[in-house]
Length: 352
Image 1 (cartoon, rainbow, N blue to C red):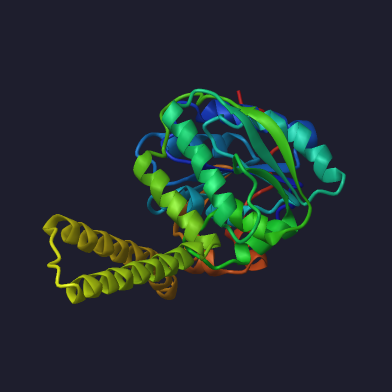
Image 2 (image 1 turned 180 degrees about the horizontal axis):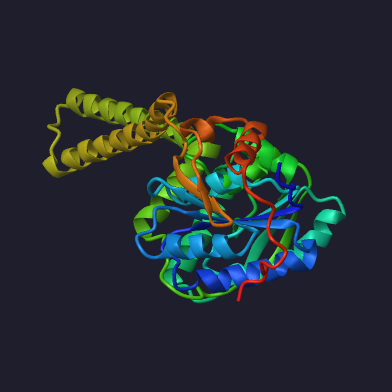
């Protein structure tokens, strides 16, 4: 059985060929500063269409600490992150994006906070460089709306960049939902969670993988995963509509008793349109929740791993890997590389 590392760094990657080697160099240097050679760097290729997997394979062949995980298709950031967490074995696990907007060097500040008793140390953005005013405004609105709607306290202006203890990661992996919102799920777990304020850098290279459509879908996943408030809002809208409709009926009846003809085709159509719109909004809200229930009931694998690579050797994992318990996942990873020779001393753990 391979030696269990003290630290795991998990980084989902999607078309990150331009900056991946620089990320690995900086992440490995930070990990070496706090854990020596007792760390692993898990790079998850989330269905990239560029040379991302080729670079990951090359790094895995030359650096003993690198483990490459290639997903069968693009599953999205949250499931790719979950796949990486599933492959991690360290007592401390850092989840970070590979675009270098979150500096890996902050690990050196996170680790002492965790040594003082924190279960989770999460990065909290005080400034976001290289992003448009629309992205900043929409992100601010989203986090503030989520904090009002969510049933648990989810810190504002935070992403998935965080250092977690193994027990937190194991609980996170035991949660079965497919539409995942990791930062909210970690908040739900509880324990002692400490913020580390930092300035978020601009992307080192490439373009954002979160266009407006994905941002909206991500926001819907977050709200419907941690709040039933929209359902209550739809109920109140229905009750208010019913009250207004009754008041209009009473008004119409009184005018009829007074012998006055009710005129105003435009106002009638406006009222009908308003009530119809409210009904459609309520049906849409219910549909969002119902659709997620349907997806969960199908019990499909959360993600599918095509291959994993370490030390130049490739291995396959069971299709049921995503549904295994945390301990079974670690056992499956150890078994996949059971015949692997220990890393040779002459291999360089530095990434240049």
